[in-house]
Amino acid sequence: MRFFIELSYNGSAYHGWQRQPNAISVQQVLEESLSTILQETIVVFGAGRTDAGVHASQMFAHFDVDRQLPEALVFKLNSLLPVDIAVHDLFEVKEDAHARFNAQSRSYIYKISVRKNVFNTHFAFSFHKDLNINRMNEACKILFQYKDFQCFSKSNTDVKTYHCKIMEAQWYVKDHELHFQITADRFLRNMVRAIVGTLIEIGVGKLNVEDLHKIITSKDRSEAGFSVPAHGLYLTDIRYPDSIKRD
Image (cartoon, rainbow, N blue to C red):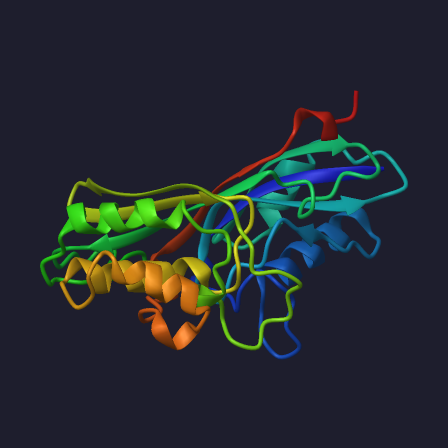
């Protein structure tokens, strides 16, 4: 039987989602907790690979077992997991459902703190220069005109295609923060952080809005802007077709 697990995590203490040989990851901690409770080796497959320091308010993963799960498994997991990882739901899906490959879209939010705030130092990027949000949103519209985003991908990434379909990209103000929200069918490694860095350079006037066309068509990471710090990035929403659920 295959199950989907929904969780969230504060990524500050972890070297990303994926297991690492010499560093602690969210996947490792979740697998070890499941294995302890179910008394068998459990391997989980995540919907994506968030980088070191990136947070998730919604992440999905799947795992397989050959027997019914014990009662109150969500409660037991939350009792065993550290305080920076929380499980929210657990449900059975069809045998061929896959947390990564069946995801129809993923959404991220990047948070920028525009004034000093001692309570969000580790959860938003402090950037106190004036940013022109109107120019940044004009540049966002250009993203919808393209599919190949190699210019925003981390170098030496082993992928078959750099094509992504961006469905949403916008900046908005929330309290004393600027939030960038983006949704796409898939994302390349470092893609959101590179897009944000490029849009910031447009926002401060270092680049013009129209420069984004040249950057994207160059397919060259060195042409795009800097990569913003990981601690301001959140995976917030993953959508699946209803057909993956067990009837």
